[in-house]
Image (cartoon, rainbow, N blue to C red; front, side, top):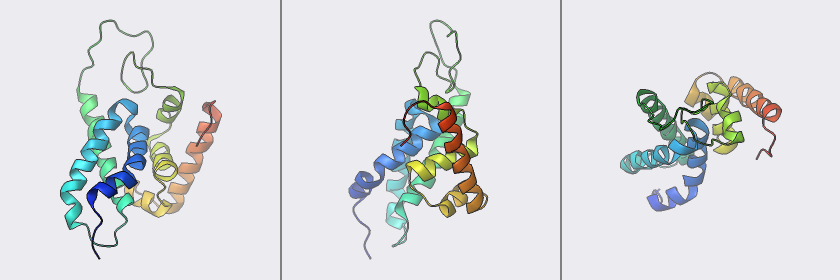
Length: 159
């Protein structure tokens, strides 16, 4: 069984990977995490076993790249002309992070990841458990708790 061209993989799974990156690192760093994900995937793609779940594989890479982004951002100082009156939930002073991103960023890590991987990337709970650790039942509970918390705090429409 031949692997499909990598360009087709990017077209098919790129939007879902970007949504996951946005949910995990926020809208400003998501493009970098997305790019790093597909650069790493391009190098490893020829070795991917036929029949693999490509989307789960890409989300796993995106998770690692997102964590790298978060770690790198935590080490960098953010220069600003004037200190903001209110701290940013994403660590980016003066940036409008939007109500949804604020609500998503306020979730505990495990809930935010479970919501992103299941509701944005469409991964099954078993794959989410493999990514974040724990059982599929715990991943299902975390996603349900995360969506319930978003329904309480976010006033817009949820997808």
